[in-house]
Image 1 (cartoon, rainbow, N blue to C red):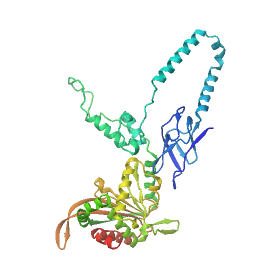
Image 2 (image 1 turned 90 degrees about the vertical axis):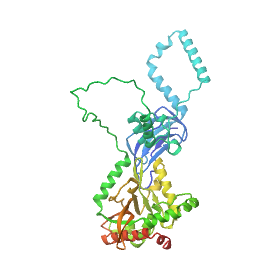
Image 3 (image 1 turned 45 degrees about the vertical axis):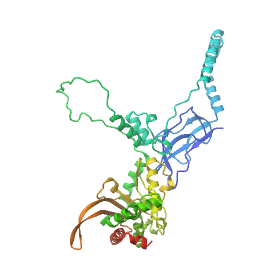
Image 4 (image 1 turned 120 degrees about the vertical axis):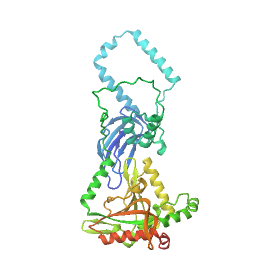
Amino acid sequence: MTAKIIVPELGESVVEATVGEWHKQEGESVAVGDVLVELETDKVDLEVSAESAGVLARIFHQQGADVQIGDVLAEIEPAADGVAAAADGKADKVDGAAEPAKQEDTAKQEDTAKQEDTAKKVDTAVPSAPARQPAVTPVAQRVAAAEGVDVAQVAGSGAHGRVTRQDVEKHLQKQEAAPAKTQPQPAAAPSPQVSAVGSNRAEERIRMSRRRRTIAQRLVEAQHTAAMLTTFNDVDMGAVMELRKRRGPAFLERHGVKLGFMSFFVKAAVGALKAFPKLNAEIDGEEMVLKQYYDIGMAVGAEEGLVVPVIRDADRLSFAAIEQNIRDFSARARDGSLTLEDLRGGTFTITNGGVFGSMLSTPILNPPQVGILGLHRIDERPVARNGEVVIRSMMYLALSYDHRLVDGREAVQFLARLKDLIEEPETLLLEG
């Protein structure tokens, strides 16, 4: 019986996907569990596997096609039926020549039989094993194809040896670093007709992934639909840095994870959201939905673009649990193993441009949320303390908010409250 491969449920609010790379082609045999095709969604890439064994008889949607939940991607026929169908097709093609074939010399038939017998013996003695192609992310596949790299030669660092874009780039760097073994060529006089300026004007067109297209669309929508405004403040990171230096080794030994800066900001953000609940809300028509829980999204730069995994019930988690969540999200964002459940929901978002060296920026809202906190790099700057100029480790904070729901006064007070909690981190412990 023919088995249909359909687009599975893609997760909350995700109804459409783009067909990525097909790992099997028409006519190839498949086993249960074999990955057939990758689907690119707005948030993550999904692998669709075979639920029955047989022959991939027909592919209905090729790479790059947009599909929806329930669409038939391909059909798998049982192995016996697939062979019979192939034989029937060949019989139809040679039907017209059947009569002349019957009149062929018997000697030729015997020679053919001997050759087939010899081939079978060789096949039995030396079984052929098709080269196994490693699992490759769609972006890595495109980069490898553009650069002429054989992905079979690239060591994968992702989950289950999956080859990522970074792996392909590292492979290219190693090739470029290798000394070129070329014979010295005599110097040629430059041609007066050719200008070296602008000689390399190559262009490359690469189709945007579904996630990148969705990111672009939603960022523009956020600016068009929300009355977005950004307010700024700075924070003295000295107390947190001193506490990390003093307690960090014991924290690492006890919990197996480093005490980073982000857990302090998650805790401080929760404290400020409790004081100013409109920043932990959303607009639904003519109603304001105030959330009584605190699911904090952490913006992470992934291979296909920005993703925002969510730390759920952050107000109930310890510093160690928050750090473990962040470490896990970062690792799985790099190897592409985040799930749709990891990215669902969120009531407030934190994005840290400081890890890339950003001094100041204006983050864009992640709808339907009405607030996003931007962190930046820590710099030593001269500041006034008790009438004296001292050098302190300072960070700029940026809060973008939807002015339709949040007034400027609340936004400024929110940042001031967060600043107080970071500059006196013991308060985070005292207030839970």
